[in-house]
Image 1: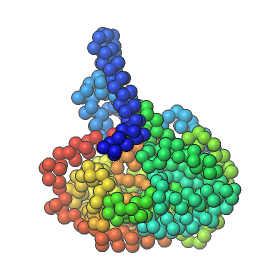
Image 2: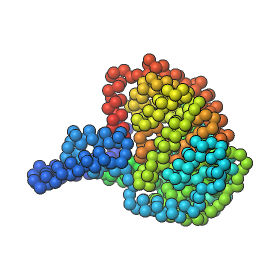
Image 3: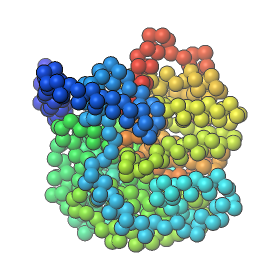
Image 4: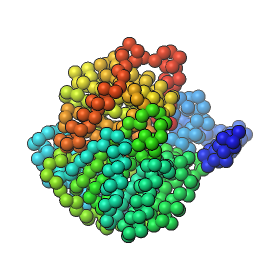
Length: 509
């Protein structure tokens, strides 16, 4: 009973109740006008026909159109009204204008360097991928950057705190999930200490991701401690599509010299201080050198889009990190919703790696709910003889989502893709490793939320030392994982029905 009362008093329940109430009121007004006012009825049908034509011709992948077409067929006029309210994936005009202004100020500091020239002679595949990322994501590539890969959250946590303690000028941090506990609390203490020493500390967390984990006005506490803080895309109990555009990035930048990214958030399950879904397997990467500038640019654009205490890019972007010999070619990059990003950059990076693979392609992902283009590319790579191995969780965080993941096993296994499940628990790592040369470590899941709706980031690497480390870690993780046999890969009929229904509507979820 106490839990039920707590739920009804929670911020989540109150917000959800307000949104449902608002939606019900709008529907009631629309239905009344439609039923009893003939001109509105005629206009509504014209609007419905126009909506269908617009949806069919909209420039996006078919998987995003199908669920809306089903809704429009089942609820002709009412469905068009719902489509108008909720179908857009665009950011707000204010956010868009702030983003454009910040990118214009940052652009002079993100020019492609001469580092790209020798890459063309070494590997044309690497060169074209670098060219794509500069064209689509506006992110240049860098040599002279050392990388260090962390195969588990506990190692990342220790390295992150050690690096934070060495900060002298500024700290940028941007995370999707933050929760008080053994992971966040010591980081919080370091940030307070550094702010007290005069270090500029900027902290950005996603309000939706922390909705049930932090107090509603937690940012005010951090502000009172001298930490510049703002919740990204602050959640408001209003009916709007903007709640789709969550900040799923994980970025730390220290003095413009050191940067971190990967799949690890700032909560106890990520370092196995608490057990939620068995052993939690996650990864991250540390960058030291010129490539950190790209992470700085991503953070500054994210921060300035919120419109509070705007950061002047030239105060930070003109810093030049010291180069180190070797280290390969590194491109930290970002992705996000339209119109800020005109392309599905994360998906295109993955597709380029899949199509370019010659010997092997190793993938870890918590979710395997991707569109036809990615599934078809994975199948084709396996059919060409590439050793395609994918590791997903054995213990899911969301059972229905895991059922949707498993619904893709049959097609992939039938084409020769090897599917494994991480037996000790939940694997949250998002990584691609290819042919001992290429790798991506970042935040981008193989699901529609990451590939279409969220703000994401990752580090694309060519010939970096961490590529070897990522491969070794994958093979060690593989040894702890259970292979899914092709004959058992297909779901039972009673599992297949809900999974297939959910797959149809997954682009909207």
